[in-house]
Image (tube, rainbow, N blue to C red):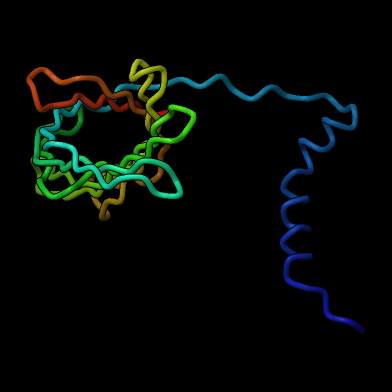
Length: 170
């Protein structure tokens, strides 16, 4: 008897997980996905440095923007944005800029949270949306690692700052 490749078993698992949607496609009663609702989590005012132009690469024009510090505050958490992070950007040929920021925040209770915030800038900067992910130790903020988030970014209250508004998807 011949041994089947691992990919075969992976595919069987994926098909098994799609059993409900596949039945719906076969004419059984389909359920609509839930509408997405969000809940405000925090606003961060982040101090940024001057962009560092890397130049043209096979992926597009690259630059990064140093993250110098800042503050964040919401109903259940507040603290400071730690210096040392950066927002890496790739300006694509179609005019869309991909953003990929990596930085840390320290809550007032001492918890350090690593933030990875990826997204896109489009429409000449009028559309800037992100999907932050959090790496956090066990404790009062561990829920951040088990939830999906959406963010929007705009010019901050002072020159050299941006405001990041983060929402939890319910």
